[in-house]
Structures are given as C-alpha cells and as structure tokens.
Image 1 (cartoon, protein in one colour):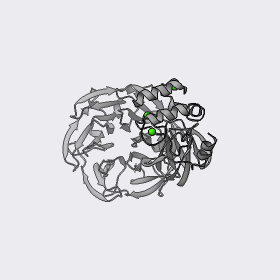
Image 2 (cartoon, helix red, strand yellow; image 1 turned 30 degrees about the vertical axis):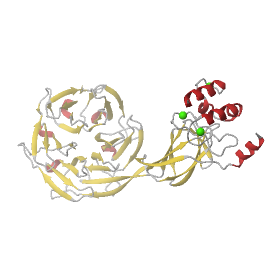
Image 3 (cartoon, helix red, strand yellow; image 1 turned 90 degrees about the horizontal axis):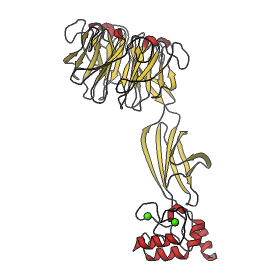
Image 4 (tube, helix red, strand yellow; image 1 turned 120 degrees about the vertical axis):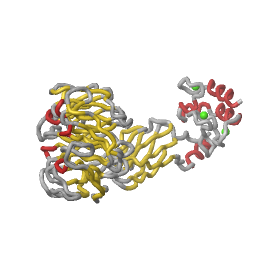
Length: 457
Ligand SMILES: [Ca+2]
Ligand SMILES: [Ca+2]
Ligand SMILES: [Ca+2]
C-alpha cells in the first residue's frame, strides 16, 4: 500500500479536456460609426426624410425614402443599386412610405402610409399585391406606419391612426387585430415601429406613449417599458424598432437623437448617438435595422442619410462545462466562484488558463484562446485518480458516468472486479463516490462489487 501510494504521487497530473471555439456573438460593449451615406435631395442615393430601413437576408439595404415617395436599395457599404416607386396612388406608387421589411424570400413589404395600404414587391421591386385599405374595420388602416414579418411569413402592421396592431396571413388575408387607442396595457397611441422575434413575440414602439410594448404571439399583453424623458430608461418619441439575432431590442429614440438597446425582457443595455450632424451623431433617427453580424443601420430623418454602427467588443466569453458537471472553475489561478456549466464574461482577449476542480476527481487544465466578441468553449472530461499501483485512470467504457474499468486498460472485465474487491476501502476513502457507486445508493461498499461482478458477466 505504501509503495503504491508513492507510485501514485509520482504520476504526473493527467489532463483530459476538449476545446471548442463556438462562433457565438458576445454582448457588445459599445457601438462605433462605421459608414454613412446620403444627403438631402432627390437624386439617386439622396434622401428626403428617410423613414424605414431594412436589411434583407441577402444583405441589401432598403430605405423608405419618405418624401421622395420611393424605395431605394443599396449595398451594405452604401452603393446605390436601384429604386422603385413615385408619388401617386396606383399600384407601385406611394404616398409617404414609412416602414419597409423583407421576408425570407427577399420580398419587400412597404407601409404606403397615406395611401392606407401595404404593398408587396418581389426582390427586384416588381409589384405583387396590395394588403388592406383605408378605414377602421378589420384588415383596414389609417396611416399604417410599421411592417414586420415573422419566421412563418405572417405580416404585422402598426395601424398608426387606429392605435392598434394588425396581423395578416402570408397570402395577405386578414388574421387578427389587437389593441385600441389609449395608454393602458395593449392600448397604443400612434404606434410606429414593430418587430417579431423567433418565438413570435411582438415588440411595438408605442410612439406617442413613449414606451415599448411586448405582446405574446397571440397578441396578449406581456409587458411595457419606458416613459417620456431623456434619462436612462426613458424615451422621447420612439419610432423605429428592430431586433438582432439574439432578440435584443433596438429603438430609434427619435427626439433624443439616439439608439437605445434593450435585452429581450426590456432591460436597458446601452445607448449611442447624440444630436448633431457629425459622423457618430444622429438627428431624428426614424428607422433602425440590424443585420446578422449585429451591425445597426439607422435611417436619419433629420440628416437625410443612412448611418451604420458596428458593435465594439472589449472582451470575449468562455463557456465552461464538464463531465460530470459541478466542478469549480479557476481562471488564471483564481477561483471564479462559478461551477460548471457556466459562462465567464468580459474576459480580456488572449490565452487564459482554466482549471476545473471537483472533489476526488483529477483536476483538469486547459488553455483557452479568447477572441473579443466571441465565445470560446471548453469542456473537461474529469477522471478519477488511478488506483494504487496503476498508472492509468479508471475508464467509463459505456459512458454512463460509472467507471467499470478500474485498472484503466480500456475495458471492463473480471480483473476489474477483483481489483475493486481488493481496494474497496481505499476507493471508498479516495475516489469520487458517484464514479463507483454501481448500485446507486450514494456510498461505496461490497454490494457495489457484486453489482459490478453482475454487470461484467
Ligand atoms: Ca460505465
Ligand atoms: Ca479493465
Ligand atoms: Ca453503492
């Protein structure tokens, strides 16, 4: 026994882990202006009070050029590609279009506001259909302002003048109407921006109530946040609203000349922008859209331009898991207080040493390269220490968390049962109990030897 213990101490600490880098976007710390284009006018690439903005799945930027009564299409870097529409009320014509959205096929939906209708176009800008008409009935509008699509291709519209939200089926037929004019829950006062998350929850910029309302997929009231003002948590005429791929909420807080970002639950994360004309400043932002990389596109009604903001990350994240779970996580020699599985946030870019420590299992160590803005993942397979006189750890051939192969030769057999019987007291005193508790009664004893014997027959 003494000789065995001496040999055990001589064994170098074995390391077992898997390292995976997961391309998940971490939380941005701030945003910086990356590009802007446009000026007041009616030439290609110029704007007159641009209102709505959308980024399609194929990456083109569509702008509802409100007072020019047209939709303009750009590349993500601002190269003018095409335009369609002119002032009028015939199909394909507009009267101060406000909101614009695209579906999964790239079809374009335009809130043709003062014509009290939604028009649908194919990705090339050819007219497809008209949805709704002027009025207060089901499926009718007074000045529809915002449009959004869910993952199933259903259309949602903020019916600005009627103070409500309407839903239409993919074929354009009326599906549902929610809300009425007012300031209570599920009441709206001139709502503009609208977006739908992957679960079907509906976010509405309840503009003249200076708040955001969140509805369930069935139109039920979930929560509201915001009040008029310029402080943190306050809004002043929130117009456009968009979601990113994680469901975070971006609001064009128009009269505060800023963009506000919230969690999906409505918790304030950050804001950026201030009143002005310089790059990075905003004037009456009306429309907001977010692309799959997390870049924020803003239609600035007051500056007659589009400005693009890129997320800035000061650090990354490390997602740590282990088998079995519950190990303490030590980062660069300091106990983080977290146990696996967990995610460490705000980690400086560079390589970090991570340890996972669980009572009686061998401590595992790994080096994790962290990239700002990304989540690096590390998973530890924690193993029991070798039995006295053996150099290999026991193994778990069938991966059920029980280590039937006590001598560590990779397979479970009668020799392992004999070893278990011989070292029963040592195992009970030194090995992790769950790894050898073959009958599952929470302790190690002779019955476990019998259970193992029966299992390896
Ligand atoms: Ca097993
Ligand atoms: Ca064995
Ligand atoms: Ca037992």
